[in-house]
Amino acid sequence: MQVLVEAKKVNDSLPIEHASQLFRYFAVTNARIAILTNGQVYQFYTDLDAPNRMDAKPFLVLDFADIDDTLLPELAKLTKESFDLDSVISAAGELKYIGQLKRVLGAQFKEPEDDWVRFLTSRVYDGSFTQKVRDQFIPLVAKASRQFLNEQVNDRLKNALGGPGSYVSVSSDPVEAEVDKAAEPSARSEGDIQTTEEELEGYRVIRAIVCSEVPAARVMARDAKTYCGVLLDDNNRKPIARLWFNRSRKYLGVFDENKAETRVPIDTVEESTPTRTNCGAPSAATSTRQ
Image 1 (tube, one colour):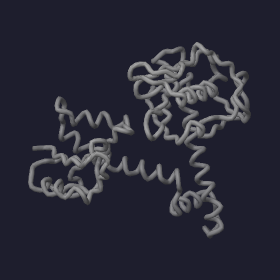
Image 2: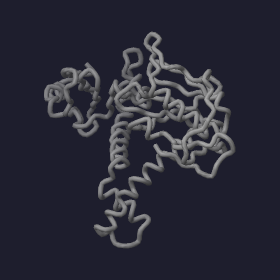
Image 3: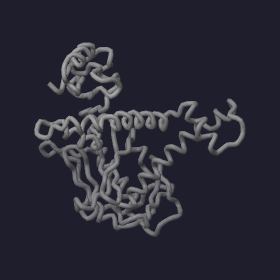
Image 4: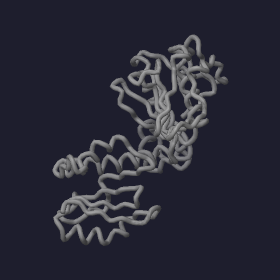
């Protein structure tokens, strides 16, 4: 026996305190992998901290309502056809800490804690970290974090359009782009594929951003079961972005020069909407709000 599974009821939370049976069986069997699941979320454990004792924290968390594509190669090692225990165990330590670090960074970007604010402030401010300075820098750190993420998204969009030299401009008035109706899918439902108004709105936002580089008619939308793709020339080999909106947590997928996708979480479509895009000559403004 190499894998143990403990299943809870659907929608049950999965605190490690409720996995007492899994802890006991792990200690008295030869299993090296333990899985705690409620049918939607799967938490994978091993014994990195102490031999034959299940760790208190998972090395991998799979949520079917919010799948992280970066985990799929590791999950493939656990399939029956290609089960590779040694490879899984060797990668578990890195996966465990990378996952935890990503969650910590995400929380700090959203609501920075005092230690994080103090750390960053000390890099740019020479005075004492007083209460007044803290209150001043908390919103500055949060704003800088959001702008940094936005710039990363913009850079990915530029690369998708033809390399780092490409230009993406966003300014401050309502979009006045010509709309190519033939390029825009209508809100529809075909089998399992449904294009929503929210996806259409996201598509229009992205087209508005990139139309300073290419004619709007070249920016096409192609819907799929799990995401709505935005493509250049309706070509799957020229992806601009993906709208992962068919889930409780929305993501904007952007691509680097190697066509590797990164998903950036957004709360609403409006948060990624520029208030104006210049669809003619590039303007001097180059920032956008997430």
